[in-house]
Image 1 (cartoon, rainbow, N blue to C red):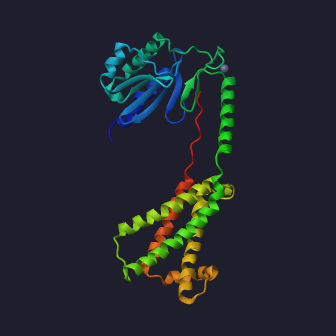
Image 2 (spheres, rainbow, N blue to C red; image 1 turned 30 degrees about the vertical axis):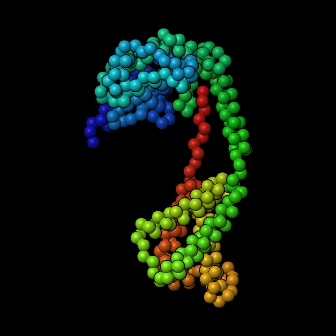
Image 3 (cartoon, rainbow, N blue to C red; image 1 turned 135 degrees about the vertical axis):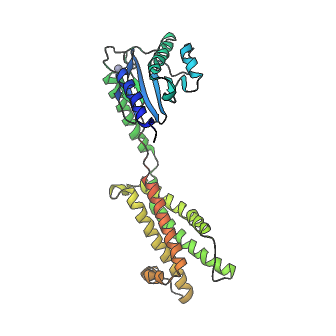
Amino acid sequence: MTDHAHAAPDIIEPMVRALGLKAAEGGEFFGSRDGQPLVLAVIGWDPPAVLFKVRVNTTANTPVPLPKALTDLAGTRVVNVSVENGYGWLTFYDLRRVSAQDVLPRLDDLLSALRSQGLNLAPQCVSCGRGGLEDVTYRDGSVTWMCSDCLAKKEREKEIADEQRELRAPPWGIFLPLAVVGSALCWALVWFLFDLLFVVLKTDEISAPGEVMVLAAVVVALPMGISVGYLTRKSRISFVLPAHVAAPLLMLGAAIVGEGLYLSYVIFRKVGILQLAVAIRALPAVFKAYPEGMAGLKVMLLVMTMLVSFGVAKITKPPLKLKI
Ligand SMILES: [Zn+2]
């Protein structure tokens, strides 16, 4: 541990205070300087690095002739300046390599460069032009001048758009039963093919390196776990159980039925009776009688499919960010 860890707040906190910025989520601070809405984002602690985003009145990638103070600093490779996507960007990649007193004057250089190019924003609502706004508005990483009415309207529009997107999305969840049945069949088929391998190779024992077995199990587990996990997430089952709980349980059920199917086939071949229920009832006894390696393989495959389905069901899409 070096002294960087506490050096960073020593540099960043006074900067935030000097600019009178407010804290937002995710290590961002927002406010304005000389009427220009800006965000200060802490993008690193070791080395301490910050990014200033100054809102400009265009979304075009306008090249801005930079004051010499900025270009000189940019030449040192610790600073980057650009104007794009509606913002003037000023990044300090390593605050240890510029003196703290240097940062705000460079920000002011950027602000005056933007102003001289007519890229500055007037302190009035960018949507309706209403003046007399007291403070800038910050939402999800964007900052601008916006009145509360226009902000509320934007938020309503976004809610409606979100709902419509939800309605337009195909109801993939209805295919969940298919995925569960498919996984059960897949499970049975895998072990049927595994048996076949012994017949084809005319052997009683297949020895393969552990890595190969794990890899094979992953290849089999992925399609089962992904389809069940994804469709569980999309299904209405989440009203009853969280998707990441339901998916591994469904996977376990599919494996039990799959194993029952496989066993039915084995029994059928031996005694000519085909009864899934009988086979499933016989499972615990049969499982105990499996050679250790075989039981281990089955448990490994089961755990992998359950883990994959859990992981896929757990992924949550971040909400769409509000662009202001
Ligand atoms: Zn407005």
